[in-house]
Image (cartoon, rainbow, N blue to C red):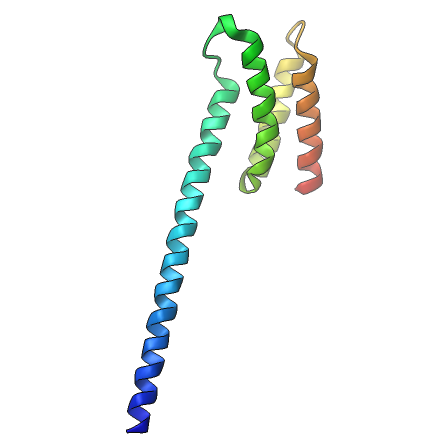
Length: 115
């Protein structure tokens, strides 16, 4: 009798642990998907010029995006390579906005420290 109640208790505990694990796993997957979508949206906004008439606003947005890429730890290696490449390209543009290049330098240094 006692063995049956122990087995029942253990089975209940295992079922509970499994349910908690599945819940946490599902939440983590959803969070990773949301992070993936947000990251790729930021990258798209960084490199895709939507409106040539709003060039100053575009540069402000690019600068903010470069800073925000620091919050996507999972993507540090890719972000690091991307920003280095963009900075090399942007340095060749005459009269480039200095704060954009400065934010690139700051973010590159941040990634070097973290990777």
